[in-house]
Every structure is written in C-alpha cells, then in structure tokens.
Length: 448
Image (cartoon, rainbow, N blue to C red):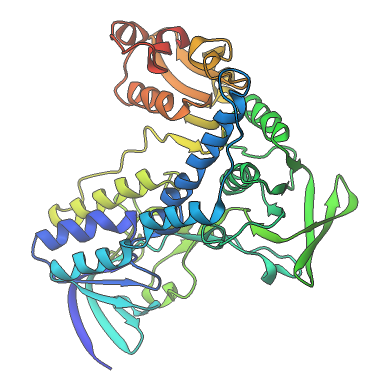
C-alpha cells in the first residue's frame, strides 16, 4: 500500500470534472484522476453523443417517410450493425485520448472504484491517496427498481452497444431515455412498447406537446401503455415476459429485451461518504452555493451527483465544473448559471423546453402565445404534421420568460429562446433582428 499527496483528487472524468482538471493542471497543481469506467464520461461514451448519432438515422427515416409521394420514391431502412459501427467512430478513441491527455498534462491516472478512507484520503485498489482538495464528479446511475427479475433488465449503456435489435422491445419508464430509444428502435423496424406507471410521461414538459408526441409515437407504431406498473420479469428461453398491471388489470408483454428507462439517481454507492463526513440525500451530495460540501469543506461535487437546482444535463455539469475550478484557484466567488436550462428530448420530432412552464405562467398571469406551426412554410415543405410552439411572455416588459417547442427545428428555436431569456431581450429587440430566410429562426417574429 502506498500513499501520496495531491493538490486535487478528481473522481470521475466526464463533463462535471473536465474544467476543474484542465484549469488546475494549467495552474501547476499535482492531480490524481480516478474513474471506475473508461475515461471520458457518460455523455461522450454512453450518453448524449452516441445517442444523437442513432437519433440522426431515425430523423432520416422519418423525413423519407413524410416525403413519399412528394418527390421522393423508395423506402430507406436502417442497417443497425452499420449504424452501430458508425457510432463507434465517435466513441472508440475517447478513452485512450482522454487518458493520454491527462498524462501529458502531468496527472496520475487510476482505474478502479474510489472510496473515502477518511475526510481527505481516497482508496483506489491497493493505493491510498491524500487530497488537499477532492472533487466528486461520479454522475448518475439507473434508479434501482424493486421488480422481481430486475436482473434481466438492460440499461442505456447496453442499448447503445447492441449488435442487433430484437423484433420486440419493452422499455420500463416514460422519461427521456425511454422515448428517445423508442423512436430510434421503431424507425429501425422493432415493435416497441413503453410501460409508464402514471397518467402522463415526460412530466417536465408541456402536457399538450407531450400529447402530440404521443400521437406521433402511436402513428409510427410505438405502443405507449400508461398507468402500467411492472411487477416482474421472467426469462423464457431467448425471450422475456414482463408481468404487471395496466389500469389495475393484470397484463403481460412478451419481448426480446427489456430496457430500463425509469430515471437515474446520484451515483454515490461505494464512495463511503460517511467516512468522509460528506452529507448527502437521495437527491445527491449536499453542497453550498459554491458546490462545496457543507460538512467537509475539502470536498467539492459537480454534475448529476449533487443536490443543486441544476437539471441533470451536460451543459449544467460543465457550468458547475467551471465554477468549481474558479473556487479552487481563486477562492469561492463564482456561482453556476442556473437562470437558463434548456432541455430537449431527441425524439422525432424533438420536444424542448426552456424557462417558465405554461402551467406556472397561467398561475402567475403571464400570456402564453400558442402557435400551431404545421401549416407554416418551414414545416409544410417537409410535410410535418406535428409542429407546435408555446411562448411565455411578460407583456408589461416585453420579455420572454419561457418557450416550449415540438418539431424538427426544436434545437434551433429552443437555443434562440434560451439566449433571449438569458440576456433579457425584449420582443421589440428581437423583432429588429435580421435573420436569414427561409429558416426556422426567421419564424421567431411570428412566434412572439
């Protein structure tokens, strides 16, 4: 057993750690980097980035189908093995490149499970490391499900690495992961069933837009079962039988794979936080406004593992990572920006939201501008049936408070609205902008 002292020990190598590691290394700090998995983090290796590659193929299939009889002939299909090979071109090089980058910057790298020995010592394998400062950036993991036969579930990591899709797929849960994977798999020819335990899936998004997405999901063959509670999963040969209830009545679904899509929880298991006097709850590690442990000031935490008000999104993890780097190098003086937190479900069409919800707007008396965009040029030219936007406006100031969008141009519009909210731009200011035409952005004036 050896023991060495570091200025910083970082547990995790994803977005929540990247700025801290980089800036402290540039400042000449002695750093140890630990990850129990491949270096690079969830988003780059088994999350946002590879998922978006697969979603891009689903978009092409949907566009092809919409334009049949409107100048396009011949059905496109997804070759799953070729698509997965293409996906790997984005992920395969990252672990080695990340580790090489850390080593070239003079850092010591460790592979293995990290756990606290006491308030400032970390054990990884046979090594015990002493840290003047410690960053916990371990992200989130799938929420445990109290289901008989839960060992038969596969997880998002597994789905993004499947060599082939089954003929029939069941997704347990009705959140981002379930709907994104459902839209990918359905476009690849799989029969998909989503089992969601309550009345409305995707609860953090506008209910009317979610309902439109459910209609689209149904049209492409996705079976969304609401008020469906899974009781058990049983393997029968090479297949699985999911037993549960739907609207109180017994039901069962047969499939080739069962995917966990029922949310994620902070990844604190095995860290032995009690030994470090680091307080936490089911929402994550308890930190102050500077992302410092309230009970052990040597420890900082960033990203999905914390109990901050930030959404569990890559840009927010990056914001928190930058904030921690400032605190460590310059003293506690920089707070993450939580004012604007745009989020998107990369279904086809995509569903997005930023700022105040329409429900909150109505309670507080703000105007909600509703636009069915399906007949607008931007969407009519690609024969989109489902395209809608809702914008929350403070008429007294002319400022935009929130936006909710469903359609193929959601990414573009949500980011425009996010900038408007961040910088307190008024409707009059936005209307003076000259935007390239014809684009989705040029619809901005009509949306407000």
